[in-house]
Length: 451
Image (cartoon, rainbow, N blue to C red):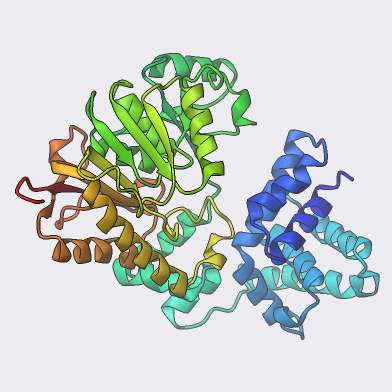
């Protein structure tokens, strides 16, 4: 079976039963041999429909006599696919979107409802023509309005709204609904920026450099499977978003240092630290998930790095590291609200309750891992979330409890960080301003007179 819309339907059915979107998509794509343009269509339909779920439900609620949550689950998924194509896929003709969706209904045990499917989609098209734009009715409340229009839960919009106000929050929502770009980090121990640029351009890949980041190269077009790109097997580069690259520069590890990466898997930052140290010194890559640490081992072998040692376990339990590290990186488990464009279903999985639980874990990890730092050493705390409860509040609580630690501004690091710095001394990357994943990071220094 190679019908892209049927494959998308099967993947979405799995997602609605609880599967992660990327896992469900991989599962259907692995079973078939599709041409590239069909693979791209399946991917776009699955991720797009999951992202835009709230908006698509609102349209069903407004056009159909039965609300979306009262529709049979599979029928709701079929309607989502049709409306998604009509609303967001300009390259697909409206007639094709309607006909293929009616066909989907027929092939998936809804033959008796093809008239309803056809009618609902055609009514949407009529309303677009009649109103000259958008038939979607929006609530007055600004947070709900953005939530329905851009398809986010109200609580996430509220968190951003309190920090940014309406206009910037809307820009952030729009940014998070784009398809993500791929950034590479060049391995300077094996190659040069120029060599990688030339190799990629020679196979027709469009790339551009990222300002402020000496190792970052962004792929701006379609790239196909990453493993097939030139330089992958030679260890010339690895995939890592620009924001994540900033973190290791802020840590600023030196050759010969002992560094602990407390939540290391899958190892993007661990291998970056090794590159910045010229692969001289010792880096402990710690994580409690051995399967994800295997990814770190594979990557460090491919990049030909020798200085990384693996340590399996929970970073709250290691006694052997007391006062041993020149620096520690705590890239803490978080809600990922800065990377929602990469994880289509994350906005529906996280809840205010899960954020509360994560903030407790983050505070514990920070308290424990700070003991691993020598006097006058450095700890960098980083997350890829934009929630103050996991960022500013965690750091403020830590500094109140541990007075022998202080924030150190990034001026000691030779990168122009001013675009991300705040008056409090921490760094915050806002995607809609800097065009990279949302990140929070802070560099902390342990004063010498501490135990």
